[in-house]
Image (tube, rainbow, N blue to C red; front, side, top):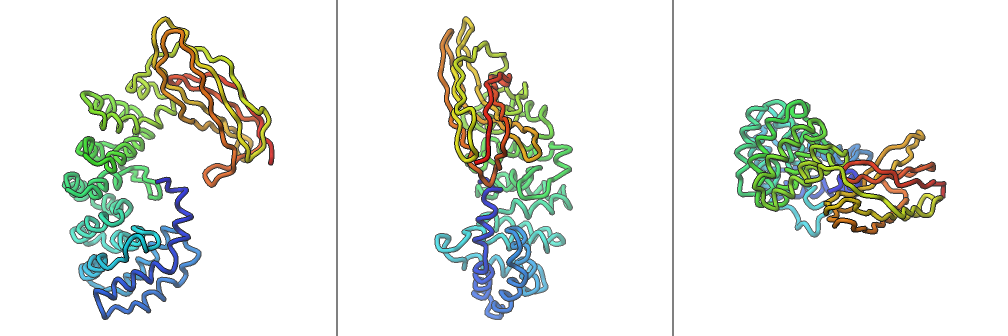
Length: 375
């Protein structure tokens, strides 16, 4: 999911109903649990918090109202899982269990075995990708051994945790700096998952490799090249998805792995960028003809780059995927794209001159520009 875009709507749905549901679930398995006192405690100072802060806030309230003995507290939490309302009728669905996984990471570091059993169960209902990370940092050898065992677990959510929980640059989480410096321990885990039968797991493997490539592009290229040997379509998909950022950065090694190592012999003709002057909130049409000027057929990867003006007046490149083309000798193909300039939560537009380029097999080729004006 696009986590940054989802964060605010999720927070808005993670309201007072969440601690009330958790209180009811715990009371269903322990009649002595004071649900009213827990809910009142959990809602104190709740409103201004963001999504992850709310999860941690509820977890701290749980610690104050569950038994002092950690094993006993975890037993109650896990027993209450089966009393969750049907997902269709519950706001936030699986996010209901965010405070449970936060409870484990905040209060379970001194109870490794119990916490691992809890995360194994909870990740099958929500995800343990955030909560397993403190255990990795404090007990790297123990945690990696546990993750290696989970790589062959029959449940796809558990296997995905092996990859997702160890991502060095996991969104919404603190980075795992040790794995940023040396990705070898997590690469060993990914080797166990590269042919996983679940697309859910394979997508995480690709995202993890993409993370590694941001710090160690040469490692990513080497792994991708090795994995492509005798690879079936599913593993090829992992490699292509893992290389997506490297391709946008026009890294030669990534392009070579995907078969785009040569400099394309093409001409860019009949360029049209219209209107040349466009208001924020409208759109601009970008079109051109790409012609193979070589004597043989060529396979070319075509992207385009918009140099967006930022608030400080500087320009920052954003790469957009276009097409992969197989061009016969002399063949010409017309390509057109409509670029929306609406204001979005993920991109704020600013007035100014916006340059546009093509990337053909990673090589930049100028297209033109348009001027963005205030609406």
